[in-house]
Image (cartoon, rainbow, N blue to C red; front, side, top):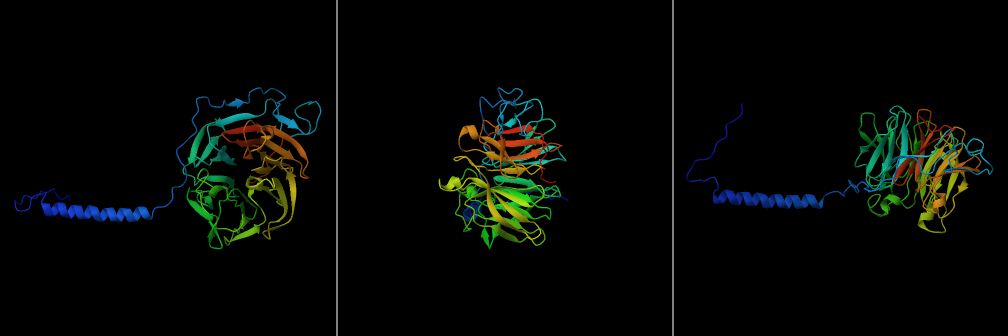
Length: 387
């Protein structure tokens, strides 16, 4: 039963008596002290949020301006007149080619395709959100905000999202019920730098890179001093959860991917951002999945400085597709190499390209994160990444 509201009617104790006000003032003062203490213990904001790109002249969607068959945005390294698309370059699948399918982001990164839902997730790092592009109707929406300034994303063999977070300085897994599990946030008791990109091998191990880009300022994360002595590549054991260093001699390890047979591991080296004498290339390693280790490092492909390659994927035939940007505008886009490292061709994009992935129900559509926009092109190959 609800108690009735009562009002004091004692003439010797008015409702707003002086001692009542003093008690209230003391309570307010005590609350102020408590609030000050709480504010002193508050956590750092989780990165910039709620600042989408506004433009009075948004980039147009659809085929890029000037596109016609054969599309000049596709350039083969093999010179000669095209007979049906660029000769020897499998980036062409039919009429038309490169399309801009979404725009209005600050820095698009980390694409991953979910075949079950026919959608692509990708990071908009400075805006602290993960975006979702629905392939069936072209609808774009926010999947998660804040995203802890997420960068690279991938998918494990159970269809769960694996995310590298800058401001979280961790690798997380989004469970099938939507809850989030922290996979790795420390090594040897010290915080990671800012995990950048990840892959999952057949045994369930998660391999990820940890450069310092996300703690270098407040634009893509939270500025902080690195706690790790080096910028390592790590492996998380699928059974014990142990985090182990597998490579420790990168200047800035970045994008990462597997060969179709998982016998090779490719990692982008973007150390050139830290100094002109540092490398800009892709390294390849022999991969021992069962042993959880790599060996026989060598340079797979050099990038044309001052450009760097930020993201990398393989197709089912072992060809290597990588992003190119930050340098000469004529090099902005995607490059494709044979498994032996010979350049096959280029896809020219009118913005700096950070990352890419294969998608579509046949895994033959290449999605490209180009700065403020998401691009796509149908290819004559299929992406190798599983599932």
